[in-house]
Image (cartoon, rainbow, N blue to C red):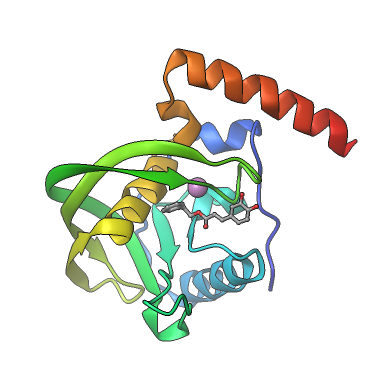
Length: 171
Ligand code: QAP
Ligand code: CO
């Protein structure tokens, strides 16, 4: 089932999400819906709050070297904790909740992630490059934060101006 994606400036995106306690069939069905929704929208990452569910769950599907998004590469990450973040890198980010806007954001290049999979099993993952960036982007959503919240004052002002104009042209 496809779910509607909430877009900026919807206030729901500011909500802090809560830990997942039950790793049941209802959660599995929701994760499957998130995956279908993300693929349909040409996304590589989606947090539960983007489809109005304030739980600490996110999915990622990073394209391989050829740019193919294999369904076997899907990561379902629940109640994540970042350990040992290091290095810095800049990447031009976008977000399904801020469609049509892309900005350079600096984040950690490497990190270790502790999380639960859909069955509640504790997993560890070592991430670098785009996977590391995507994890940090999606984990910001769990805190009610968007990538545009990380822009400098002047770049944010420029974004708001362009966003206002884009909304007007859509109507
Ligand atoms: C988050 O973003 C991300 O504006 C995932 O028109 C972004 O999937 C992680 C998308 C960059 C790491 C690096 C955005 C699709 C998808 C749009 C996305 C759009 C269509 C964004
Ligand atoms: Co996003």
